[in-house]
Structure formats: structure tokens, C-alpha cells
Image (cartoon, rainbow, N blue to C red):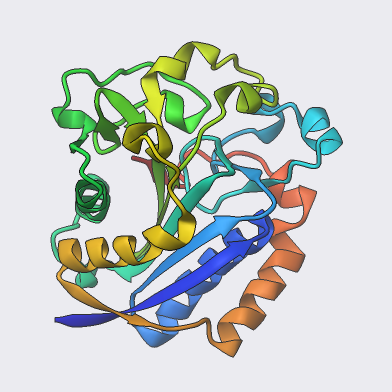
Length: 272
């Protein structure tokens, strides 16, 4: 059984979160040790898929006036508003999970940890591919559209996942919403998503009680251990990873040249 690093980063600014994820991807090239990181977002903010045109999908003036940060992800996919949620990121190589020779296989095996996680909460989660109630509409908002290995519970989509591959290395991260305020999110989007309210859900609504971030961290750890057949060893960011993340935040993720004005690229990554 292989050992993976497990890092609970708790809550950070959106710029920091995306910088740390890229730092861990860079670090793997040197250490060869896969890592699962759990984190939250403070303040709440939008992340935009790498290939999205930020001004075309978000009302940036409203985001600015309401002090809502906007950050472009290294991964593909579409907009997510990160507020009341728990987020995971996973960095590994294809050799760490031999079954993931294709992008779709990667989503299937990695998101298997989420299926296990929801099961431990007593929820019947399944991949959209196997759910006859899955909806197929397209949207610039992640939770409003379904791909094969998105996760459905009671006929509604929960969360979203995005991936970036760099040669044989994989970065995948995903959002697990605890609460979800569609009306609030809708204020900042160029697209009206009020109509999708019945298609998406969150943990608080599914369980009928308030779910707390700290109570879910260990459950996610155990779920990924079980689904990937690995042992998660509690760890922290190294000094080199912290330095790299600080540099990435300052030179990339906090800058409008990256978040707002970078030209979209169609081959950046794929969303589950």
C-alpha cells in the first residue's frame, strides 16, 4: 500500500488556494510523492476555468463592488462560486493510479473517492453517466451542466471537478458545496442560472442538517484512502512549497493579467 501526503490547509484566499495547488503540482516533479489536500475559501470567490473568457461570463464590476475575488484556475471546466464548501485537490502521476490511462478514466477513479464519501454520509451517489435523471444542458456555471462522471444524488448534481494534465502528472480538484445560494451567485453571472435551481443540490439540503467543514475533513481522508487503496499520512506544506506558492500568488494568481485578461485556450484541461 502506497503512502500519500495528506494536507489540511483549512481556509485561504482564492489566490492562495490556486497558487498552492500549482505549487504542489510542481513539487511532485521533484518528490514523486502524491498528495491529497483539503481546503476552504475565505473570502468567498469565483474560480474561472482556464479556457473561459472571464469578462464574457462574469459581471466584473459587481464582483469588484461586492469585494468578490475572481481567480482563473490552472484546470479547465467552468465557473464555480466557492463559499460554503469543502474543496479537495489531488496531485499524482498516472503511475500512482494505473487505471487512469485516459482523462475519463481519471475522473472515474478519482471521483470514486467522492462516491465513497457521500456513501459514508448515508447518501446514494452515482455518476451522471449511470443516472437516467441526469440533465445535459450546457452552461458557463459548473453546477448547471453535467458530464459523464459528475456526481448525482436524488437526481440532482452536487459539486464539480476539474483536471489538468502535464505530461504524466495529474492535478484534479473539486468543490463539495455544503450550502448553496443560487440567487446570490446569479447576481454576478452574465448567464441567468435561476432556472437550474431544481437541478443542483448541496450537503446541507441532502442531509437535513448543517454540515461543518472540520467534521468532514477526516471523512474525506478515509474515503480517498479506501477508494485509492492508499494510506494518507498527515503532512504540511514544505518551506519550498510555501515559497513557490507565494511567488505564484504574487506573480500570477493575484494579477488581472492572468485572472481577467489572459486569452482563453481550448486545450487547457477538461471538466468532469
